Image (cartoon, rainbow, N blue to C red; front, side, top):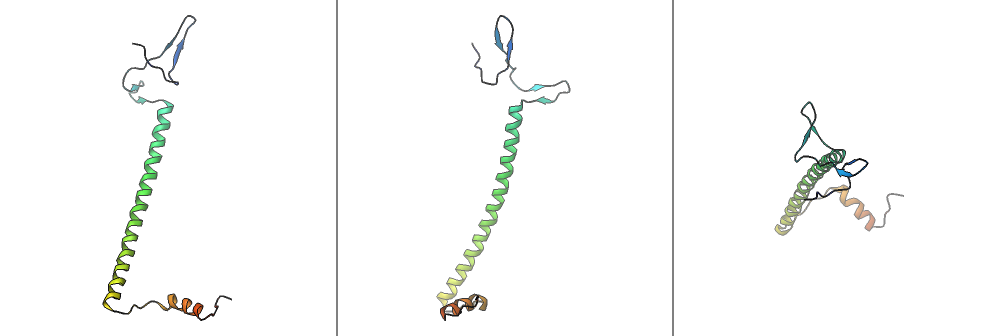
Length: 110
């Protein structure tokens, strides 16, 4: 069986032939017993860690946004229920006053 070579398979070159260096199946260890990985594997592992961190921060942001949406939906539901029951809604004057002044044609920002 002829092994398939990838573009980064190391080769042993001699004057009469070129043959691939076929790694044994499984991890390679150094003299101290540590696993030796290629630069390509290192870059992939580093990229994976960055992706995991990005995922975690995006997931946390998503959870916060969902909680905020649920809070706003509860407020909307409460206001809708009060309107159905005929209660008057009390809005802060700071929200109402600019709208009323604009309807009256009074420009307070000039």
